Each structure stands twice: as structure tokens, then as C-alpha cells.
Image (cartoon, rainbow, N blue to C red; front, top):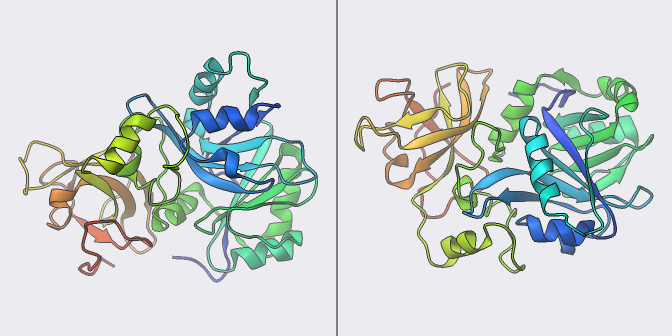
Length: 326
């Protein structure tokens, strides 16, 4: 899919939360599944925010401010969950010295992905990106490389057009669809309003992506997540697929003749159009049927899905696949 130039997306549909104050690190450490206290300035990680039942309310990436920037942490998450998550976090601040600001409206978020993304960032901004690290650019902007090697650039809104112009000579303009495509190929789910509070964190592979620390103390949902890790047996996991259909939406259900025909056996988490054909998607699917290769979208007679390889292994599932369409 990628062109000769990496793809730059000026509308990633990501919200920006700034969490600041003397207690910001300890506060988030007690709310999120990741080890926030382990982060040095400029370091970042994937995270999940869970219900007491261990279901993912939201997920994303966060980083501590790099040296030279105002102390605090920046969280990126789905745009349509920002206000609900900000309010929920604020409920637990109590007497802690913490402020939680939804800075989405006053921020520019640019995504950069594909072969040559690191070189494009260096040519445009003079920075050398490294995985899971935030580096200052200029005018208050920061470039952060996600663990899957996509980059996000977060800046005060007035600086956005200047940064986009600098990137235009080194990257092609891309849509939100293309940015989602890169995330799906990387096997990184994004929980949105349509899928919030539906999946235990491990079923969307967030344990495999390093978003969960099993050595830290308590956080919402920790007991359920830990029990699943050490005592339970997962019955479903996240997988990638391709399908000859467009307009596939998060929350759509999957079916298989391998189970009762009227009972769904999977749920779409994210999807994007594919240039080759149809759409690519990430879906949580029952392990008992994922290897049957007979999954259908929307109903037993819907379009058939072909499984795609993920860039990481899913425990207990064969990695060899039949050829995907296209």
C-alpha cells in the first residue's frame, strides 16, 4: 500500500489530554494499566484504561514531557472518547495535585507512517526519532515514535500548518483512512465509542503490545486482568483480516458456520479501506473458530473474511495462513 514517500495525515482523529501537576505521574500510575512511574522524561508507552470488570474503556499512547517542555504527560486516544475519559479520570483526582486538560481543540496532531517516515521527520524537522520516545521539534511541538514505528507530531494548533508544510516536501498527504490502515497492519487496536467497555484488555492483544504491566500495583480492572493472565483461559483474541466489502465499521459482528449460525463469534474493532481490494480490519474472534477460515461479516451469508498475518505472534494460534485475497 505505501507510496514511494511516507504518508502524512493531518487528521488522525486522535484527542490530546494533558495531565499535569505534582501528583500527575502517581495519579496516572494508579489509573492506567501501564507502568507510568517507570517512564523517564521523554519516554512513552501504550496504555489502557479499564472498568472495574477489566474491560477496556479507552486505550492509546502516552509520554512524559521531554526536557525543556512543561512537566506532565500527554495522552492520545480516540477523539470520540476524550470527554468521557477526561470526566471519568477527573472523578478520581480528589485531593491529588493534578489537572486534566482536553487540549484537542488547541492542538494539531499529525501522523507519519510508512517506509522512510523516520528519514522524513529528520529532513523536515532535524530530529532523530526513536521508538517510544518524544523529541522536541520547535514552537512547542513534539514528535513521538510509537512502539510500532509510526510517528505522531503534537503541536499547538497555530504551528500545525507550518509543520505540515515542512513535511509536504518529504511525505505524501494522507487521509484518516490511510492512517488507520497503517495501525491495522501493525496490529494495534484503537478502542472507540462503538467498542468501549466491551473487551477485556488481553482479548485485544494489549498485553502482547506492552500496554499492561503485571508487576505494578492496583488500578481499575487489575484483579480481573491479572486473574485472566495467570488463572484464566482466553477464549478470544484480536486478529487481522481482509474482506471484499467497504464501509466496515467498529462494532460490526462476525459469524461462522462452525458455531450456531445465528450467534456472532467476533466483533470488528477497527477497519479501513484497502487500496488492493475491499477493507482490512482488526476483530476480536473466538479462538475456536479463527482457524476455520469461514468467518463472514454481518451474517452467515455475508462477505467472507481472509485472515492476514500480524507482525507479532498470538499465543496458541497457528501462524501459517492461506493466501489473502488480492
